[in-house]
Image 1 (tube, rainbow, N blue to C red):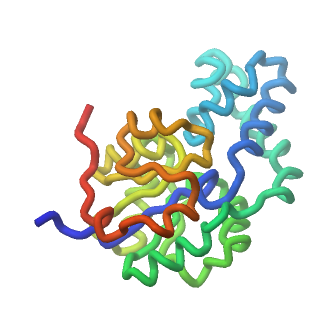
Image 2 (cartoon, rainbow, N blue to C red):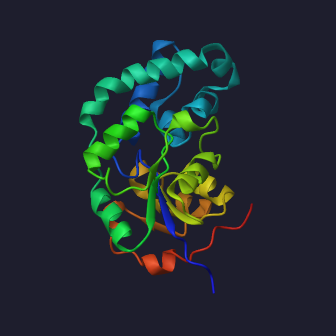
Length: 226
């Protein structure tokens, strides 16, 4: 019999709070400020990987080498005024409560900046519900590397986990640590993309996951190595 996962790892940006397009716009404005020609749709396709990887993925290694740190600084500046518009996604707070009621440890596997993650926790009202929280300050390797979800699992005191995320990068990070991943479409990725990346379930948003079969998901297996 497959052992039961004792922990659920939740991505934050784009999964629990509606920030994907805010970050895409902030990054696009940062590129534009340095006359780097990148279309907004290209930026959106990279949201979900860490900022340490995004510049090279979108604009190439030469731009990363020449302007990477400045672009990350400008992204933060452009994102700051947009933070006032951030809202929780439907069902997100209720999902955390449900998972706790089902006996899971719950950890936020966030690669966001500490201030951004703190804001999300406050907006969601889940500070007393989560067992652990990670941020980008705690590891040098961002998604799709597995360092962040692995650290979140360790901090929560769990032994194995199911991950919930909104991007193919979340699914890949989970796969690399040997965990199945449930995906929500709130990051803008399509159903076929998410399933093709290895998601064990795709839902529209956190609210739809309130009716998911968590007993089955608690014994789901990670997708095979590629």
